[in-house]
Length: 426
Image (cartoon, rainbow, N blue to C red; front, side):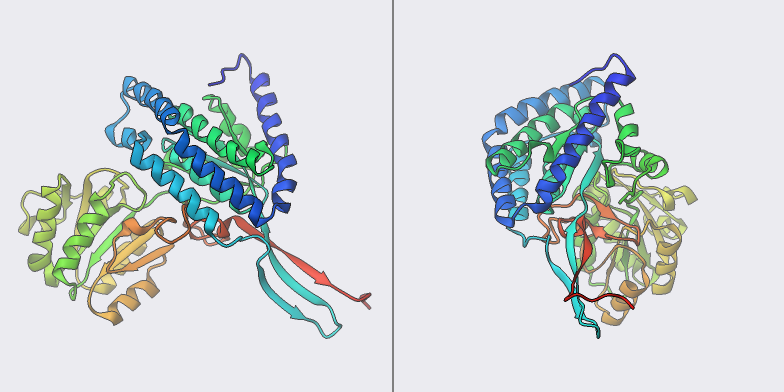
């Protein structure tokens, strides 16, 4: 952990990080798939061999978090164990095995004048990733930027600073083994929040893109203050709609998993929409399942009529991303009203319909304007790993560049490569 006596010292350190990243960008842009794969393979092995060291660092972060009275759901995000460390290593290996996203020929055509024009995928360059408690983001972000030929400047939350540094050390082991610059994956080691502001200003033009991964406060600050392009989602207000033609067993399984598998992730369902036609037959068993699992139910009048234990829902509940064992439940009169509710209150992140009516499902998936729409599946699948991307750096809900899980392929832009035989323009 680095402490600074002055803003000038911090600024000098951050500009040095930016300059080193920019210098590393060319080597990464030119790196072969074989070289990048070797770096990732060694990094995954280093995560495993350094597990005790990473766990010790994480224990220090957990101790400090408890001393600071951090909420239990946030401590869960911060905590590492053997399974999570193995998942990090395995995720890096999956990324290593992906096709190289750089150099892909996206399109190619000839002009009447004989010019041969190709659109080719290229790295974005230097990507600043700003995130909060989850230390596994250090591995995911480092691996995805490496695979896509980019350079990463990682600034994790001050509560995960020890864990992030230990994980980054393992990633650097992979870079060194492959002969790639160590500055290709850097971690900002100061807890000073001013470092974030400096990244948002672009570190003297060295940062090409900022990706925030965290809560609404962090993401809102990044979107509002960044002077470089941002790829982000502000919040994950996800819905599950139980349609009139839903299968009861699927409806129960999907609803329970979507909310309770992990309540702290952005793909966790926050609102359950129940079709009035199946309120008693499906709604009551689903609500009983959720309550039994420890979930607080906040329902409208129709919900409370069949499930009196529900707390009365307010207008604010339809707008709230709880990230906790709380769900808002509303009764709707059919597919159109469900879509209207999602359009009005949703965050364009992830929304699911449970139904055996294929036409209703297609209508839902065509009409709901979210980055991810699902049919008969849990919203918790909103994850790059589950999409076969190995991992993700976040979920994009905007409509420019990447949308949905952001994996290695989404961390590329493109250039036009034009081959001529001496043509000049008349």
